[in-house]
Amino acid sequence: MNDEATHRAERLDRFRGYLLLLARLHTSTRLQGKLDASDVVQQTLVQALSGLEGFRGTSDAEMAAWLRQILARHLANVARDQGRQKRDVRREHSLEAALDQSASRLEAFLAADQSSPSQQAQRNEQVLRLADAMASLPEPQREALTLHHLEHCSLEEAGRRLGRSPAAVAGLIKRALRALRLRLEEDA
Image (tube, rainbow, N blue to C red; front, top):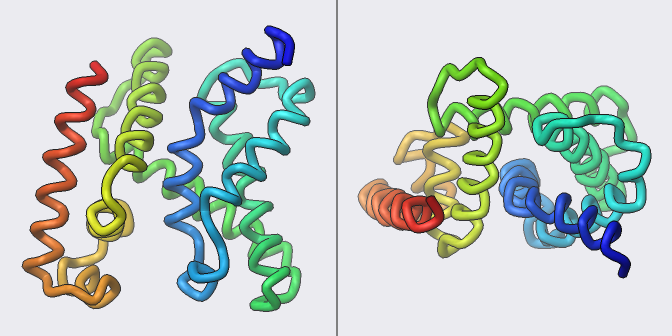
């Protein structure tokens, strides 16, 4: 691989954790046993790498939006291929909208009403760091944190979905937040 190709691959790879988090959020429970979110993300990045020369955006935010569109198409195709639903363009558009909403919730999780370009760039970098840090969490902690903070499930609902008590979910969230804080402080 030449230097330019390596640079392009590294640029896309920065978004791996972010895409993985979004893929996990939007993989239907029906498909979770049949689909590995990391495989969908890998396919997304391979397609993006092959089409990167046609990408005309200049910012990380534009790159993230472009990658979300590719991810949405892959998730819709997988759902269709599994025979769960017939092709319906409205469903694919709603999946893109849902991914955009999740990305917005992830940004809101970091808080901030930042408007200058440098502040926006800094927030985009923080979103990528947060997604990578979340990807490093043990699965039960990541799932509990995702359900409660990103999908806005109550502790009771998260407990039902995870097969745990609300108190156990609260403990998982507490440990996850502590681990995230430490990881993000180390990376700062």
